[in-house]
Amino acid sequence: MGTDKDWEKWGATDPYFGVLSSEQFRADKINKSVKDQFFDSGKRHVKRVIETIREHFDPKFSPISALDFGCGVGRLVIPLAGLANEVVGVDVSPSMLSEAAKNCELANVRNVTFIQLKDLSNVTGQFDLVHSYIVFQHISWIRGRILIQTLSERVQPGGYIAIHVFTSCNAPKLIRALVRLRYIFPPFNWLRNIAKGRPAFEPAMQLHTYDLSTIKSDLVARNFKIPLCIDEPTGSEFTSTLLFALRMPPNDSFKPMPLHGVT
Image (cartoon, rainbow, N blue to C red; front, side):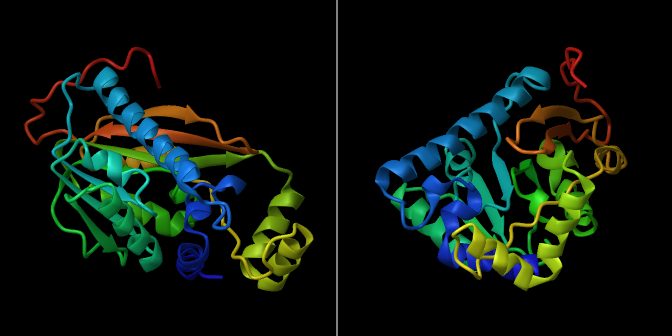
């Protein structure tokens, strides 16, 4: 069950649930009120990201350009576009990107470009802010690590990366093994869907954990300051982190604010 094909199916059939997996965002329940809640959550998240950078790094930070990786239907792209002159949204699903473009049109947002993910070779230039939230847990570690390395190269000196990853799972080994079986043996996932009253062929949302120390080392090797890591609630047996890092200019002239004891 290739994740790229899975996410295109989510984009075509249930895009809002694919972004935020709460039953209220199912395709048959989406209305204006629910959509407003959906996009309001994006505004709150972007506000928190900017406030975190201002508190711990640069009190005057305001992005001129931003990239949102795994942009889905534009939940975070739209509020970013209200802050930056130029925003790029990247996603693997053409259907997600189509819905995101419609949402930008409805919001009268004109400064966003959407790009379908290949290997990020089709994303050019550098950005003040490269961001990704609740995306990488759906990408396997081997592929995801390379993508994070590549995204870090899209951060211009003096700019920031803000990346969210799952870092561990506390579920019993047997449960984790059964979950992995759903990923590699589709009929097992179909049976589970039927048992839960879901569409039989609904794709599994793969969940993967990342080695945080390796991500930190990869960023430091690319001239980023040691990242600031903030624990994020998941509401499940997983733990997760929202990681922020500043890419230093070659002459190291930019002096960030102290991290106030946050590790």
